[in-house]
Length: 231
Image 1 (tube, rainbow, N blue to C red):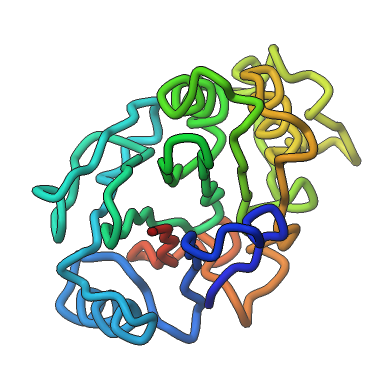
Image 2: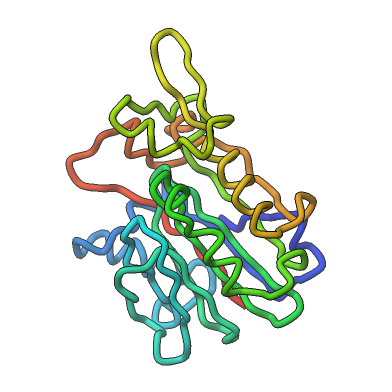
């Protein structure tokens, strides 16, 4: 599906979207998943040969994509950026947040895969710094991901969120983390204006008919959606 962010409405050249459960799993570990991937992009009017994939590591590495990246996977990164037209940037997600960036000043687009590890590792500030020296001009859309209603953690990783105590809550002996709040905190701290950040506000774990959710489903083989952005 195409995701319509109001912040991008004045820039029709920017297209972004996210597959849904009905489109099938978008991993590339099997012939069936690879077929789903190709079929989905063809339905969007995008050649699979023009799609760049991020080879995720759940860390903070940002990678630039150029014409020679088309149809390839860039290893060991969780965010991609480019100024190339008709080069489609993509990440796979299954509770982690797809985050779409556009810089109207220089025409750069970017996409990030941000789960809790990406949030605490500093992926988003690193990407903002790469995209612009004037971060207040950046426009950022945050797609569906696991909400604070379902993102429960254990004590063993609680210390990872020491810098984001306002996003941690305790209820009935359980610990929950608000990842969208951390995403907003990090983006604003990096200089992105609050009014230039838009959330899609759907929880992947709450909507089993629409989205795969790793935490909800606990599948033996990872099932994912694919998020994309391109000019």
